[in-house]
Amino acid sequence: MKGQTAAAKELSLEKVLDLNEAGNLHGKLMNLRGADVAIDASAVERAGALCIQVLMSAAKTWEEEKLNFTFSKMSDALTKTMQLIGVNYDHLLAKESK
Image 1 (cartoon, rainbow, N blue to C red):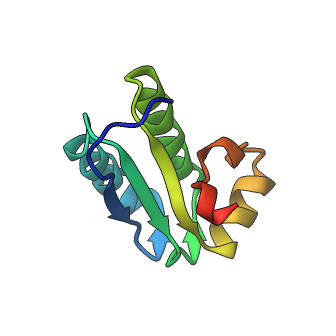
Image 2 (cartoon, one colour; image 1 turned 90 degrees about the vertical axis):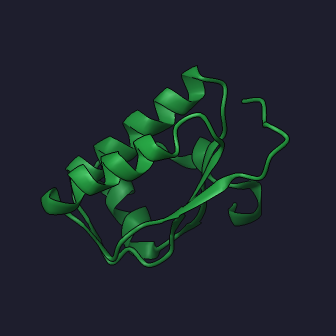
Image 3 (tube, helix red, strand yellow; image 1 turned 180 degrees about the vertical axis):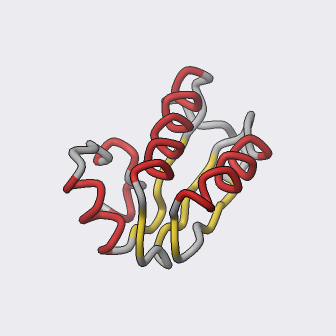
């Protein structure tokens, strides 16, 4: 993906990414549309499949718009949940976090 010259906007995720948070997460992401985004998921303690689906859908949208969508930081809990449900997120990790 081609990076833009402006710094990426950072979005810090909540501790609990459940059904109740999915709508809020979608709204926050839509407010950042059109800019590079770096996701700080270091605080995530529990993540549900719906929020992960929202994040992966956003990643695809940003890719189609030729913008960067990366995870600058990921908690162990989110990493394990993504692995458990079979989500490949390696291409979304910021180079510093690999």
